[in-house]
Length: 105
Length: 118
Image 1: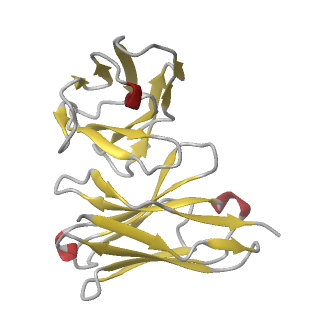
Image 2: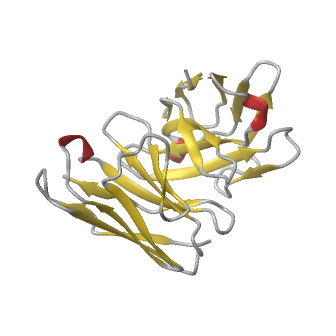
């Protein structure tokens, strides 16, 4: 199975700052990578799919980039509601796999 | 409103069984692959099982293969997960998740907690 490694495990920033989250795959996943946001006590929500496409209703401050094995989620200017856990997920090969998450605090 | 609502979770003893349900509304259920994803307490997300639109293809994580059975009722807009031979490490919140056309998980339910303990 493909392994996704997210870094850092925890990212401590303030509102208005820029956040950069990383996801590295153990082998190429082409562009088949997504990002999900999960707030405490809530279900995950799809943010970005196919590396850089924002899901419906996702603000433009969320941007995904990368290809192959290295991917980045950038939040340009943090809003208070952005503090959450973020997971990457690949669908390049079966089974679908999630990274272990980055907590943005 | 687009919605997935899980039910059926609870406390069960090791070796026991439980059946989870997921009721879909607000979209054409039979047009989507459906999935179960779980999250152990304080841990990350783990894909559990998937079923295609007409139940032609079914897939399981190795950790549940032979113990769990995913099924769906397109007439009733419902998804199910029959869980047998439950173990302590099956303890988790179980989410029902809709598959997008490209197999991303684009709609999630609120989850139902399954606790396996003696």
